[in-house]
Length: 532
Image: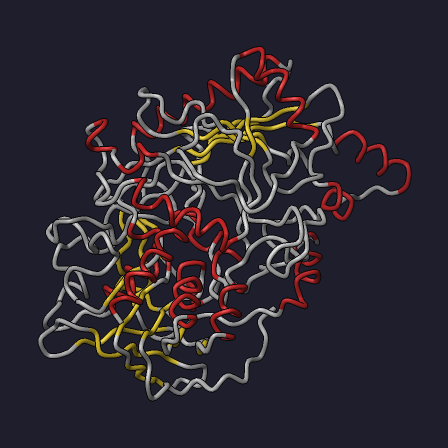
């Protein structure tokens, strides 16, 4: 639940940097710059959530009709979805201090080398203006910052110089079931790097196994960006919550941003001036803010001389399959993945990346089943024994290549609680991506067949859904005509406006994006600190 903040929401008289957003990108940038003795103001659209409420939030999420854990919805979060597929934006976004890490799964892996060179290697997508080696030291920095538990046991992973900060979580019982089938089929399994503590780290306890990582971790063992927000505040940064930025203003020449105009709960608008501005509001709200900041100099939106702000919206697509297994699986004991396979990631056919996941959760939850059951006593116990720990499932993330006709724009016909046009998400799934989803389902079907499992459900090309990894809407590049930011994440059009987060990704690969978000943000902070 949101806390009633007594924050002074008037603007600071002096600021070196304004950071818009306090998710992992904004929090890391704010901490690094504040730690370097710069005056930093963070403007966050949502509230602070009280850490003491996490267990109650978990219990609420488990109850039938428990409602939204993170207060998402209503006029504030209105949006429209167009295109061939409905995009359920509010199903997985959070506005608040900590951003999407408040309810994320916590898996953190590096992009592969091929992800930075898709056009050069395969003639599809785009090349990044930087390569894996440019980001390599920042990946290691990000793993230390987030606190990653992992093992160097993945033969398909890109090169690294040092071990993970913490040892990996051991394979689950259901991982061992999959292992026999995978060995027979010649499929390699390996550990999953997780941004959750396998031992005490950075003042937080190790994971205690609540198993409700998504939507909420009650123990604090899973990383949330609140950690770096707190560190930023300790270093002197100022965080203003419930302060949605309405627009960015620029000087007469249109070369520099001069102020972020934000609203407060009482309806007042303020102008926060600064020398530098970092927008870190995610792959949907970042382009929306730039489009809302149109002016006579930038009639199509701020930093949009290329016309590409909002274009090339990408997500990862989910493929999955599961069924009943004729032995105890002990599913749902662990609420996160402990094993996966990158074996098929760099295959030339299909070109789209594919990451196979061995799920530690399948079938109905015993808590949910018990609370919804109409039977009691021995009948209920028999039902739970029949349904719990008897299912097994696999998942996969599949890459979606960038397409200009997938975009985030403004719906001028509908407004939010401040009278601004809401985001329009125009999204579809192309035939190439569908073929990659088919390939994922083929591999999953082979593994289940080896285990003697008949699939009871399948998520594939026709009923796939997004992983809610919003990428690509302010892409980086060297040419201002076909990108929004340069290799340092500074906008081409305005010398003091920077963008942090997955919206700068030219391609998305099939790896969960948060570690790359963190690495790019730390790299941006280093460059910006030198600029200051």
